[in-house]
Length: 90
Image 1 (tube, helix red, strand yellow):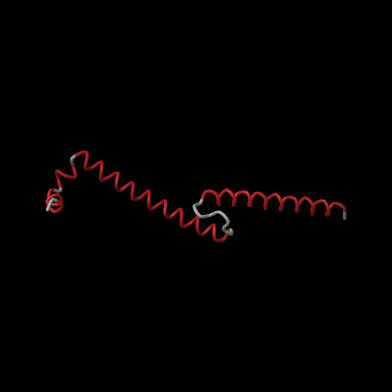
Image 2: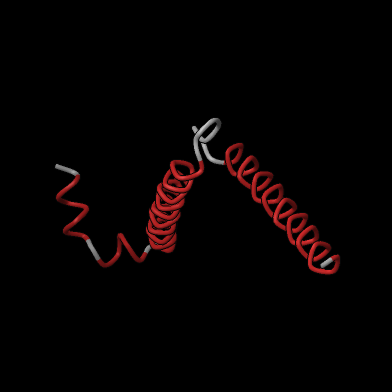
């Protein structure tokens, strides 16, 4: 009987430790995500997913702009697409 009680106590301690760990991680996430402070975890996770998608979109836009500027600086863009230039010079 005493052994099962010890196992029960250690199981409870483990659960408490896990809950504390999750709470700490949620607090860190609340500080990291814009507008995340004070949100309940379910709303925080939705906001986090939206923020990740927003950041991914920004990366894609910046990569596309980088490619355009590389082409522009190499002369490729203007040398091979004169019709585009004439269109925008009107």
